[in-house]
Amino acid sequence: MGKNDEQRVAARLAKIMAMICVRNSSLEELHAGQVPTTRTGDYSDVFVVDADGRRIPWPDVSRIDDDEMRALMRDIVNRLYTFHICADAPELQAEVARWMAVASRWDEPAIDPKMLAHGIEPR
Image 1 (cartoon, rainbow, N blue to C red):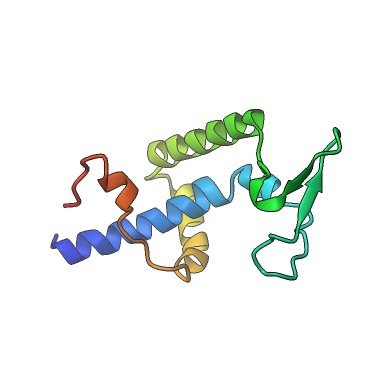
Image 2 (cartoon, one colour; image 1 turned 180 degrees about the horizontal axis):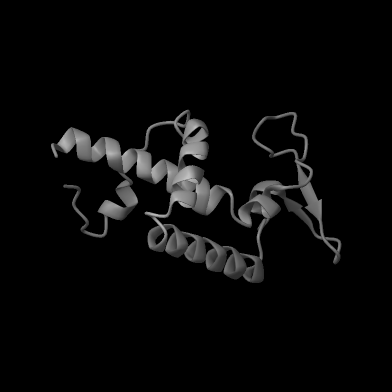
């Protein structure tokens, strides 16, 4: 398989794993809810008032607590593990085919320079 073919396959795999294992995880529950209105477009005009009366600018608000992050990461790891273990299962292949139509409309992936900063080299 040539480098272009490898990159195409890796891009499709990255998109479908992101869709099935991350997007369709408990992340959806965290994503649900009301989105605040902003007139500035950058949310600098949005504040959260907490139970102690602190007025916290929206960009400074933690939107996920430690317990939610732990639960989310467990869910994602379990889904990624299941994806790899069941990769050849016809039922998972059917899910991949169903969701690929959506994921294929996403932007093409790019090499993450933050990962490369740790000495990882793309093939």
